[in-house]
Figure 1 (cartoon, one colour):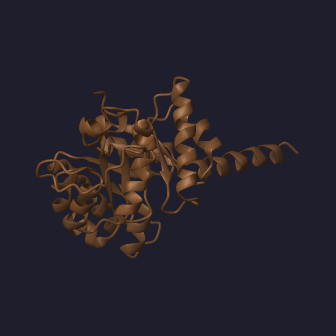
Figure 2 (tube, helix red, strand yellow):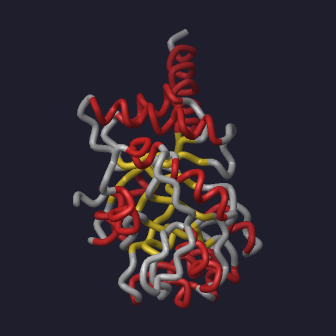
Length: 262
C-alpha cells in the first residue's frame, strides 16, 4: 500500500510546503497543482462553495496528478460535524483539517469520525462502498486501506487550545497540530501581531507539545520569508499563503510596476 504523500510527510515529520485554496475554483486548483507545492488545502471553513465545489476541486487536482503532478490534498472542513467528515472523505479526501480544537476529547472524536470501526479504535465512520473515494465500488482494497490512509490535522487557535495542546497531541489518531496564527492572535488580545511576546510564546508552546508527543506541527505563513523562519523553528506542515493572496499580490505588483513606468 502506497501511503498518501501528506500522511507520509507527517509521519516522518518532514517539512512540506502547501497552499490554501480559498476561492472554490477548480481552475485555480488545477493550476496550483502544477506549481510544485507538496500539498494543496481546500478550505471549506472560510472558502465559498459546498460539497459540489469540493468535488470539482478534487477532480481538478487529480487531473493534474494524471499529468505528472505529485501534489497531495487536504480538506479543511467547516466544523466538527461527523456528516461533513463523511462527505469530504467519501469525495476522496483522506486528510482532513479541523478548526478550533480545544480539548483531547474533541480531538479523539474527530479522529474516530475519520475511521471505520476496527478492533478498539473507536471509529464510527459510516461505510459506503459506491463513493468516489472507493472508485465508485471498483477499488476492492479501499476499506482495508482507508484507515491507514487517513490523516487528522487539528488546529490550535485559542488560549484554551494552547493550554490543552499537550493532551491533544497525545491522542491516538491525531497526526498533526496546526497553529491558526490569526485566530490565536485575536484570541490572545493582540489581533494580527504574531511578534507579540504572548502570541509567540503560545506558538512555541504548541510546537513544543507536538514535538514531545512525536507529532508533526504546522502553521500558516504570510510569505516565503516567514515560511523559512517557521521551517527553521521546527514546523513541518507549512502553508505558503493562498490562491486569493497570490492573485491579489500579483495583480498589485504588476499595476505598481506599470504605473511606475509613467
